[in-house]
Length: 483
Ligand SMILES: Nc1ncnc2c1ncn2[C@@H]1O[C@H](COP(=O)(O)OP(=O)(O)OP(=O)(O)O)[C@@H](O)[C@H]1O
Ligand SMILES: [Mg+2]
Image (cartoon, rainbow, N blue to C red; front, side, top):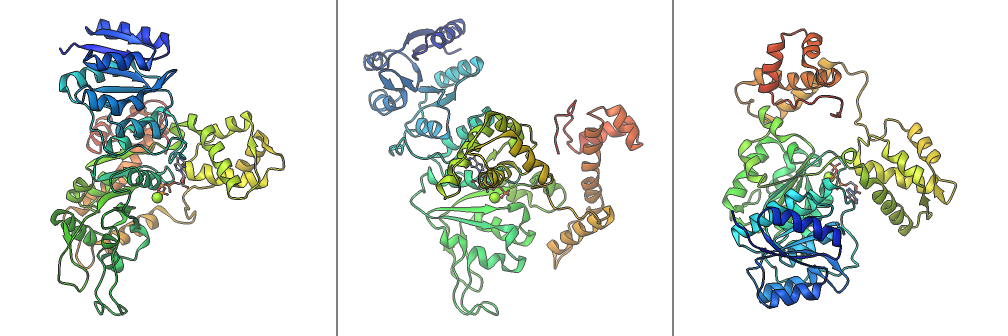
């Protein structure tokens, strides 16, 4: 085991005590202080093997100290802890060269294991030359929940890289916002951010949309047109709704990513690509792969760094911050300025939010306009929920039978393969597509009770178990799985 001398700085004595005890028990030696200037004295004197520092101390800021530490002791790893756990704290820490950023309250085991990892690799973070932007800057993302902290840490770690990122999450969880933050705080922030939505482009236009076309390349191409790849040169290309990309276009995209160059429609000269790719989807790509609708090799090219955004119902704690933020924004845009009561916030927390943050944003806007009082109260919120109970739910045609729904999907799938035919094994793939939701929803209805679910389905218990394994169906007891 790597034991070392930990320089611990935090103005909260209780935290110092807890951390010192835990670190000592794990075999390290600890020097602790509540002062940034004492910490700096130790570092200057060459003491310690690792620094564990709070951000806000009465006589200084742990992150502001970082550039000096990097200059004086470039190999000394610094772990930054903070209760100011916004996305900007994470990004500032990463940009100033912190080894790791730990939001408070922290898990002691995580602190110890991070310390030991840093001691073992003896490596400090990569300090970027750039100074973090001004402190008072507006936050690109709102929310301090544990679920969002994980997202912030990934974003922060990615700022000094050009790695390809796959952002997934339900509709309205902030995928595009995260893609923008990755660009705005990344190395290419001076370059363009170009978004293209695969679901919005007719199939036959996708190639020219992505790669551009020459004059006369097809009917209607009266002049040369730049594609998104060209427009995004030097910057970031955001491929939104990547799961909706037709197979043929997937093949083209894969080749471009592999070869690092593209040719316009009707053109001959290859053009070198210089774009950072961020893709996003609300679909389960692994299931699309199994169904033969998404290329596995393309998936692995894009899924270099996966980043999953939590649905709003998994971070109810963020609702008050988000609600107040959207009220402020509404007021900035000229809508009436409103406050919101504590009860109203509780009422918001009781909702399931199938449309996630977007649904909340829209609701708050409506409330800002509709609420007769200066402060939005619980009754107004409840009345609004009662009025639009299915708000943001996907539009389902109630008249559509299951057979019609399946037929609609199959037609779309066959169209996707045109002019070719689907890859062999279609029968089994389609059945799996059907079995997956059937079994998942039955299990859900039976609260995870497999004996009951087998009975409802009318199949043998062992058959059900086998299917669950084969289809990778998550088994959870109780009713905490929401669809
Ligand atoms: N963490 C957040 N803080 C502030 N605003 C947010 C946050 N997350 C989402 N929003 C807002 O919610 C709305 C939806 O976000 P966004 O468009 O990024 O979602 P999405 O995941 O791309 O949705 P879709 O899958 O429907 O395209 C936007 O107006 C965005 O500004
Ligand atoms: Mg989006």
